[in-house]
Length: 306
Ligand code: GRG
Image (cartoon, rainbow, N blue to C red):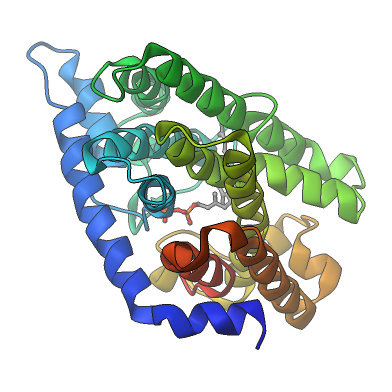
């Protein structure tokens, strides 16, 4: 039996139930953390809430919680890390949708932030979500030990900054002029998408005071899954519609972008995503049956239809 098949025998539907439960819990956490304020500055809070509440798959929050569960982290703590990571993710989507970047009108089945509000408000709401994420991590409610909080801040900064998501986005914007080879595309996607998927996997373990070996194993799991997740995104861009995904599709080919699908072809891209899910699952070996949901998450990332 392959590792993917073994993972599938754990319980496929349990993952969907756990993902939904985490989505509900992180929505409630974000609702609390992004409370409306008195005064005209509430416009930016309104825009933050518009982009951060009630939408998206919430995969990154799920990963923070499920990774924390391996080390018996209280859910009240892992949900704060989950919310912080989701704030970063939502900021990246707001900025990615702006006219200066992808110039998209649709996100999560609704008008993008700059369409719903205006461009300046959208930029500010992304900036404020980015800032608030670190405020949440730095708060003693996230963990009583300041050295753990500092590690969490460092992990998220590395995942989201120029060495991670933002750096990947920079390369992506330059990609048509760079003639990237396969290794270059892998590196770009690891940075742009993988780092913010590996990040919450690592941070759940950091919260639990895990060993460096265990933190790194979860990071390697997240990075392999992140690449599978991105390949699935490229496949959906070709095979799916805006009605199904809630965002524009067919954009990569129209832009002449080198994607996993354009380089490998559709079927080989799907095969590579499945192989990466197997690779991700292999990194969980040390955690045995306790990692069943995380194994399912890797399969979901590779085969998702949304
Ligand atoms: C603008 C700083 C900055 C970074 C942008 C994440 C990103 C980098 C751009 C988003 C555009 C995109 C299609 C990225 C590739 C895959 C990806 C991250 C998709 C969106 O994540 P999902 O599918 O979205 O988890 P939901 O809506 O489910 O949360």
